Length: 308
Image (cartoon, rainbow, N blue to C red; front, side):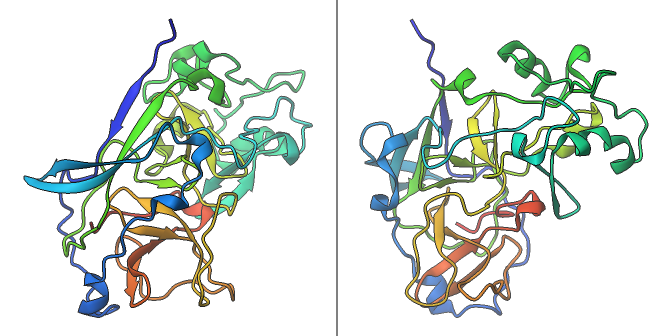
């Protein structure tokens, strides 16, 4: 019998940042203009069963929510590649990495020069024959993809395959009618939202823990990689997934945050970034109410916190 792991991801109400809300960039009316979640936007390929409605207790309030079950396996695009196998491999055989807001192709050449990139001579994850140390099994993935990396998997390019965790099921609990809160909320331990293809948007990748073991865990060109706790998930938005175009020049919608507010791409149709975003990466207008904009791919931060 196959083992199925049920990961319940609830709305992030575990604590409040108590950050000062930005009240200068939106009218009170537009903040209160709550746009209901449109479940028809989701691609059904990766949604398990029907999206159901259920009353859920959130902070003592019975709240109508959508329960969405997904295996978080992309169908719109190929997942991977992540790690090159040889220092002569080009960028087409690998993914991307980010540092200080910039995105880098993890080619074999990039791997070979990590010691210079991070100014640390301990960085050497390739062998004398040019082959690169890659976690090429589920056992190796489990040994490397955690804060306390096992000794034998240090100095590796960490690659976990979606097939290792293809039977994991995530249940997303999203309010049907989001409600704006003046105080922002920190993320919980689960996902921060959901793309329309059923793949989870995750909090920032724990780069400090990854790099401390002289490992690197590339994203694929679509902004995703795999870990044992949530399967395939996105840390960056690169334009690979379904978008809902807007009637005006506004950036397209790419998914929903776990609090029910929409997440939109960074750039509008003219290539301009949004103005006057608050501390979470959100703002409001009369058409869409309060909503978020995804950060740039190199930011390691799709959204920064929650206002729902």
